Length: 158
Image 1 (cartoon, rainbow, N blue to C red):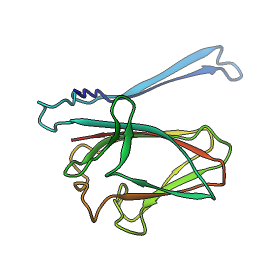
Image 2: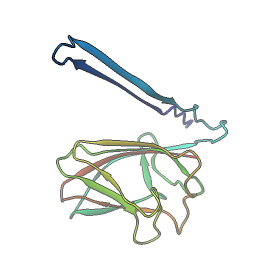
Image 3: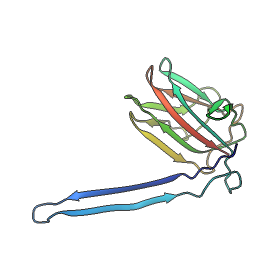
């Protein structure tokens, strides 16, 4: 199965209003538009696998093992020997969810800091080549929320 990823990060913000004597004014901020190069098996930073799943957090904590994650088309896949290049974390719930290096065989996504996905929020990160290869000793992410929270995730690796 071939994987192609074209992460795009853009924000267009429009502020409309006016003050006393200023009349109606529209300001548009569109300076942030970063379209990264296409990632695929032949790119400088290749990607070859995609994992995507919905993790139902049980008991307030759960663990994602990057050597046994789900791919919608292939079932369980192993990311050993690959780096996470792009990640999307979505939280459809009403409580914040924390994703951190696993306590055992932990994989660092954000250095020593956890990533907190706010209630109703989504976080997307293009790591490029910054992270370590997944291995037997560097493979787990601990996920903390409250019982019955759900974390939607996509990992693109190569």
